[in-house]
Amino acid sequence: MKRWIGVGLALVLGAVVVLALVLGNGEDGSGGEQRTLTTVRGVIGSEKKPFFDDPAVRAAFARHGLRVEVDTAGSREIATTVDLRPYDFAFPSSVPAAEKIRQAHKIARTYSPFYSPMAVATFQPIVDVLAKAGVVHDSGAGYQVLDLRRFLDLVAKGTRWDALPGNASYRARKRVLLTTTDVRTSNSAAMYLAATSYVANGDDVVTSRAQVAEVARTVAPLFLDQGYSESSTEAPFEDYLALGIGKTPMVVIYEAQYAARLFAGGGAIRPDMRLIYPAPTVLSKHTLVPLTDRAAEVGRLLQEDPEFARLAARYGFRTADPKVFADLVATTKAPVPASLVDVVEPPAYDRLEELISTVEQRYLAGAKPSS
Image (cartoon, rainbow, N blue to C red; front, side, top):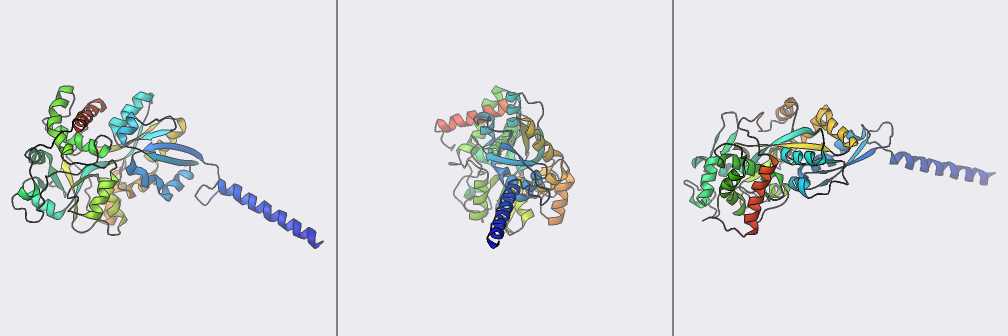
């Protein structure tokens, strides 16, 4: 009898283990009723990877029956060279790239759940030096701006930091330049190109090939004279945080990168660090292009569900409801403006692509820094 009782207990225990495994495979991350999740795959700009990897974001998708898996690529690569057939959605960091994908795949609707202004991460001594040179000034709205026209004049003259008048705090013997990513692959550099091309084109959006050729002569040195550039937006920002003013005195970033560190606390943003804005600047509008029906639900949730708006704001993104971001700024007392005034549109995809290609041709031709 004891032997049969032992066998029965073993069978019951085995059944419990099997049941646990089955239920575990259907775990929805919410602690509630288990369900089978629909996997949706996307290719995204790298700056959104931490958001999609956040357990809270994954759990929020799971509550809607979704498991969202992502790969990363540069926004220009997503629009031009990435094979999109394995993916349910493409999520580049700009409207021009998303529009290119939308047209190529004949998609009726896209989703723009959040955006980030382009900004410049720098240090107080750099702000002081450039203010004396008339390049940085107060916006009158609680934040400081980098005058792109005056800045382009410095670059055109090949000005070095140690030649700036009154500069006693950053006597580096290198050119006054903003550090960017590689404009041939990265959206943040392309957005900087969009803003500077607007200024170089007489404060107007570049709309023709003739304007592209003319403007390229002015803006190409902004990228060529830097030397090596990283392909990912995270890399130069990490250098800024870790290596400081000597390596990266000024770097073009998404405002979201800096704001996310401020919101998280932890001391990553030190007291001498500053966030300023190009004048004019452009908005990097993260735009999701659904390539399958199930991906449309991902776009809808990101754009319309208040829970995802709150989660996106934690990563520094501004959402369709400005109050979400503003409340987080107020709660954390982060030195980030509620809104920006001097904002311009980037060129249409074809014109922006021609500008990038023109700069790329100069890279390949071994263009020398201007003297």
